[in-house]
Amino acid sequence: MPKDFLQNLSNSQLLELIYELWQNWFQNEDLTVICNEYLELNFDLLKQSFETYSQLSFEDLISLQKILIEKSHYPKDSKLNLFCGASTIPITPFPEILYSLLLKTPIICRIPENYPIVFYDYFQSLIPSSLQDCIKFIHWSREDENMTQLMIDKADCIIVHGSDETIDQMKLIGNKKNILGFGHKASFIICTLDKKVIPQIIQDIKAFKQQGCLSPQVIYILTEKIKYTELDEFAFELANMIDSSGLHLSPEEAYQKQTFIEDICLSNDYRVYGNSVVFSSDKEFEYSIGNGLIWLKTVEKLEDLPHSLGRLRGRIGSVGQNLDNEDQNILKQILPNTRICKIGDMQNPSLFWLQEPTYIN
Image (cartoon, rainbow, N blue to C red; front, side):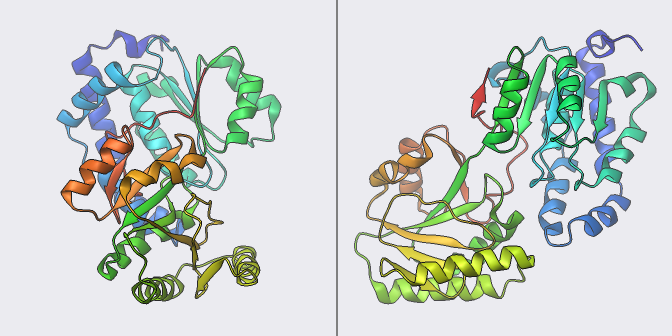
């Protein structure tokens, strides 16, 4: 197969090829069985992601390609992209494969060992022979520096989803390459004291056990004056629903969470609700340890929010909210170029959402 197979396709041929391949991949019913076995706890979320991508229309492809060409940071002249996915979030390869193909760029995907390999094996079997060398799925350990170096040497652009440490490792090894690093970001919720929204909050908290950059770690309650009676009612109901939500933790995760709560209880600076919610009068953003534990804080007015978020230094992944239209407009003004969505949809980014990289070389 000539290396420039993708380049030789007309744009209409390219779009038709991607559309057919994508539909065949995501509309296979057997895959739901595979993923159900793989992601016992997060299957609903992954299924939701499957549905989002499987509903991709031909017109969506056209629009997405236009966005990529005009606005994305992906190099348009790359001859080969190397993608390294974050082991905590199994949906990250989906868009990266799509983006590369729409830009007529072959891609190698490093698939972590805990990913559903069969899912990608099936995709590989769907690829026509003329396209086989343009999409490869390979597993190797990130500790295998020789393999990592070999793959980096092959590629023109390295796309990394993972921790800042992983990105730093890639920067050292591939310092002469184009690198797009999608590193650590953090998300939060800003809402009113409305208990009706708690089930949607639980949905965002449970997704991937708060291990992703779109997972809420802090809930800011928008209120001019704290009414502790209402705050307590909201916090206790939230904590009880988290504790009874079926968030299955490993013994190590449960011990970490219990130890954290016990340590917090020794301080008079916090109010602890159940095993999952900690109220702090300190308005500055604080990172959660995950596993269903969330900070609860207050903010008097939306204009005060940027000061509280100073620690994030522009690394906001997503903001969930239940605000009225006027406050939503204020939020968009004070947090421009930030993904703002309804509570409950923080882990369900639209197909067209392209993150800003945290590192670009």
